[in-house]
Image (cartoon, rainbow, N blue to C red; front, side):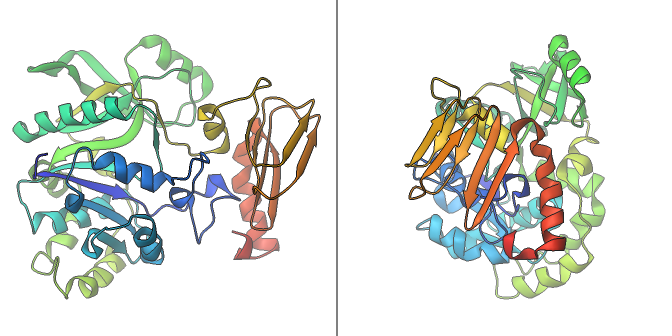
Length: 363
């Protein structure tokens, strides 16, 4: 295994679309959403260890989740848990981790991944990432993994690539034309029909030198803040510097700040069973179904005349359902939500109303 391979796993999100199972005190990445005895961050950490030495894997998270990370990722070095004092989106998160890694190894070759995504074909994932690492080790390029779309999903961003412009050594690695935001259904259908659009997975591969060069060029307002602390990383002065740095750091995504502007961005069309499992409907799509297209987690669930639904309840709870078609039924820590699967976007509205009317104890 290459000692220059590093990984930044971003684990600071709150997973609000996955409420009521995902809560502020224990968000989605720390949950066993598949009912297999392993949380999403545990799956991600184990998967990345097939590519990077364990000591080269950094978890960037909120200070309030530090103990959860230590509890779930047994054996992780405390210095590899990078805590942010405030949420500032992905560009500051990545830049901070870059400087910590750079203080140890300036020849680092880095994978950036979310902690809460599902990948069903891990062997194919490892193969694809290793292909990207070979390219970024030798060339000044920023590589992203784009997912071959299986249907016109309106919840993902898309990447358009140029079939005639590719890495000379590997025709499978295409030059990116444009990143585009979540489309409406008609536009998503056109993207699929065109054959040159991919889902944006948010998984990136680059050398430390290439990403720092891009950050200094396209996001100097972020890069220069962290540059000031280059003598403090991995020392006892790091925390105080970071606490001050984040007070003036803008919130901006790496996609918007760098990837959409840089001219050396390439994408690998990939197919390794990826899902961001960002919503209950997305989880429904990847779970195994019964003969009535229901997916159920719970030991004592009885269903009658019910189909196309997702049920997630505590194992000791007896639940009887009758006459449902296309519903989400979730109970977690004293909260029960029953919602039409096709209207799951209203979860955000539910959360807002609950915060105003009932308080944050239910969030």
